[in-house]
Every structure is written in C-alpha cells, then in structure tokens.
Image (cartoon, rainbow, N blue to C red; front, side, top):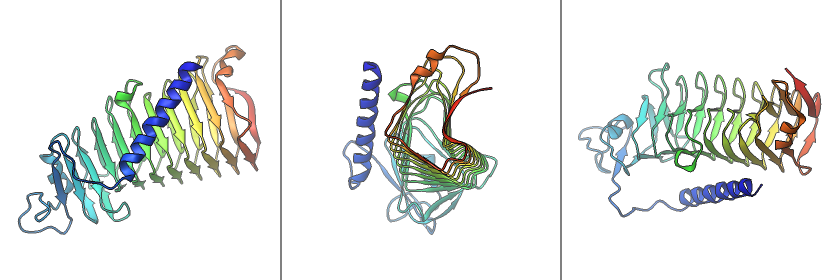
Length: 313
C-alpha cells in the first residue's frame, strides 16, 4: 500500500507540474531554444523566422533540433507530420490550427521521444496521433477527431516516468475505434473529453500504471474505460462515465495480481453496467482484492445494474 500511495503522489505532483508549465504565459527561454514559425499563408522567402515563416509544418520539422519550438499560425495544413526528438509544437488556437492528414493510410501525427504538441486539431489519418514505442510524449489542449482507427495510439514502453505519455485537456471524438488505445506503459490522463468514438473511449492494456483524473467519457460505441487488472497500478478519480453503449468501466482479469482504485466518479445511463467485472480465466477470489470501488462513487440509471457480479467468460 505504501508503494501505491507513493506512486499516486508522484503522479499527482507530476501532473500538477505539467499543468503549471502550460498554464503560465509562454516566454522566451534561456538555453538556446530555437523558435521556428509556420503560417499556411506564407509566400516569398520562407526561412522559418517570424518575419518569413514556412508554409508547411513539415518544412519546419525537417531541420528542427532538440529543444526547438515550432509555432503555428491558424490554417489548414494538409500533411502528415513526424515530430523529431525533443521538439515542441505550439498552435495559436486549437480550433483554428488544423493538421489534416494528406495520406489517410498513415498517422496524421507521429511523436518521438520528449516531444509535445499543444493547441492543434488533428484529423483524417489512419490514427490521429501515434506515440511511438519507448518514447515519452505529451498531448496538451488538442482536438483529435475523425481518424479512421484510434484517435491516439500509444505504443509499449517501460513502465516508468522516463517513458510516460501525458494526455491533458484534450478533446478526443468521433474516431473509428478507441479514443485512446494504449499498450503497456505509464500514463497520465487528466481533464480530457472523450466521446462519440466507434469503440471504447479509453482502452489500456494490462501491466500499465496510470493516473486518470477529471475525464468526461461518454457516448462511445464500447465501454467508456476498459482496463485489465493483471499487473496494473491504476488510480482513477473524479471521472464521469455516461451513455456509453456497453459499460461505463470494464475491468478484465486473467488471474494476475494488480491494483485498480475507483474514486469519486459518476456512472450513469450506460447501456449495460456502470462497472462490470469480467473473469477471463479460472482463479481464486483473492485476485479481485486488488480492485477497490470506493463508496464515494455515484451511480444511476445504468440499464443492467450499477456494478456487476463477476462475469466468467
């Protein structure tokens, strides 16, 4: 328990630090950060300066080095982009800076290690955003919508802070499969709105560590939040799950020990259960001791029941 409390405190502290960084006004930083500018209406000389911005994001990223900041003006950018290691992207307005995949069979945006994307709409790709395996990345105040498969696909990495994926204050909607699909790794999901996706709102594979707080997950074609107990350390607090076509939260177990904590959340009008527990193997009762559904959660109008008995599959 002490270990889990320490994990929770570290995740909260890290998330608060991230929010502080992005809420404070952006200022020029010492240490050689280079700012590169992009404007869809650029013409004539284009060298990436504020006076002569590039016309395409990919032009800016081609020569961007570690610690570079790419600042993007309003416009529609019909391209698939790959963010190089250590580069940050800042849009001027998340509703007016639109990366629309030119090639719909590729991700609209691919993120490498220690990259960030802020205040950008991403749409029209096979996936909206792909965070590659073994990479740390942050998606802040973006819109990810209308992609063929998952809105955000997060590939496997070691479960520690060095490779953490942060999704914060982002709208993820109307994607063909899950809003967020993550393989095994460490995650922070805070204050996102995730709705209208074809499958689950959020699907996280077993063995992951996550802090999931303040998200609104609704009207998805599968379950709102899909988790697996085995090997996981997942803390959820202050989320809302409603009107999903399956469960508000689906918790699967194959027989391995793990920890999932459900705290101060609302579950209502889901088409099956508020929370469902699915046994996908035969094992002893002690495994489910790793699941804590606290009394401070609120349930109403879930069609089958608020919390299911164990369902064996």
